[in-house]
Amino acid sequence: MSTLTHDTTPTPPSETAPRPAPAETRRRTSAHLLLSKGVVDGILLVAAFYTLMPVSWLLFAATKNHRDLFATSGFSFGDFNLLANLQRVLTFDDGIYLRWFGNSILYSVVGSAASTLLCVATGYAFDKYAFRGKEKLFGVVLGGVLVPTTVIQLPMYLLASKAGVVNTYWALLLPALVNPFGVYLARVFSEGYVPNEVLEAARVDGAGELRLFARISLPMLAPGFMTIFLFSFTASWNNFFGALVMLNDDSLYPVNLGLFMWNSVTQQQPEYYSLVITGSLVAVVPLIVAFVCLQRFWRSGLTAGAVK
Image (cartoon, rainbow, N blue to C red; front, side):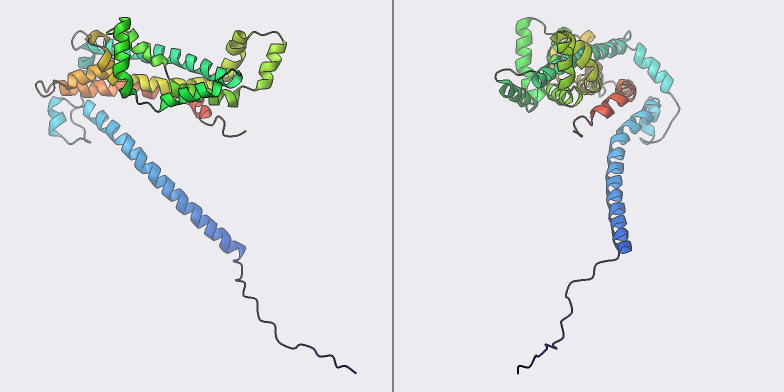
């Protein structure tokens, strides 16, 4: 008769580490979130300080007269002289600053509006229409983004010279129409904002392609239009080198080139310092106004394509 034996060897305890309690897990997650938030807030604070410090110095300096500009520290007030400085800037040399300011408005607003409309139409065509070599052509357009503007200034000057538009308004308005990055953004916006189903329904109802773009697609692309316009406006307003190459007549200068010319004589005539500083402060105002007034468009436009 066989005898049944039972293994009485004790089972070794499990070597698996105990799981942390839910409360401890939440505490660790909260600590990590606070640390990450603190790092991000610190970086943003440093970036904001770096960005606002020059503008703050400009604001302080524009309120000083010529003596206080050099006798006081950069971030302290002297005798309040802002209104007198503004009056002097606007009336100096028969109001040449107002002419420069108007030129900048012309180059930036008219040129940027035409450039943005062209970019939106081109990006819309790349998105909604199928034609031979579309992707290769779009690759060529994207290649233009990689070319620095300063590299093509000399060829553009030679072309403008052949066309006879050097030292005219067209010398800055025509080159502003070409914006490869704007075409790329317009295609992204078209993919995210204009449903193909809406276009097909409009075609069934008898809408032509031009009417389809102007009456249906363009209103849908309003956030993208404003976003591209702001990028183009900022680039045109800050376009210094192109104006320096193309223009010789000071009556055609944009405001940044005019301020540069004033600044170039400050060593011989120090009284120009207050003109340059106050004029620079006034030149910042249109950019601030444009971003504040159009922020609801470009803020929504920045999220285009983020959610499908």
